Image (cartoon, rainbow, N blue to C red; front, side):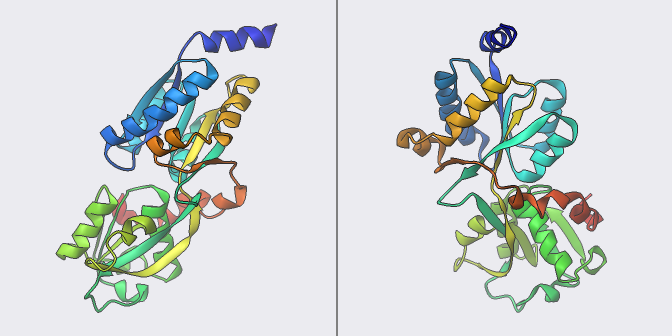
Length: 264
């Protein structure tokens, strides 16, 4: 009876689904509204969708509100988990993969052929914090012995496209972006000189304070989502159970970021 009361209390109110945008927030709202509507219908609970263009805004919203479900890059997931009772319930599958890599790109006509040649160069990143377009490119630099003192300037461009265009226009000598973003510009002004290990694309975090049966129902619905039209609207292949080994590198993001104070 006690658990039935808790569940009915949650069911009488709306759950909050927060999504960190990786592109146009308006387009992202349209995409994930299809997911929130699907979850709402299957759960029998209203869901309020919130889209955030900046990870800092998402973290602030977490501080001020109870977020029941969120979708973000793995680094932001870890930052959320530092202060809130959440756990990784699922990872997002896109184009057949739940993981992605970060790459370092230079102009197609650049004489730079290796990471070690980036000493004294200007480097931009597609993000200031997320895994594949920030932490993993920095991981590549670190593994190749490139320290912040070796870089003349480093900044984040706010998006992968902006970072790539900075390289093509000559504003930056190299950019760290996700592999998928770089592939769209290969042969159109850039080339890849290095690639990182793979890390999860997006992590679905569920609040641990939700009743256990509700949490299980949410994950069961995500794992079993096969509706092709809904998946098409969201722009993904589906959701899978996370493998903890996926997080082995990215969980040390603080150590990687701390090596490059130029970004602070």
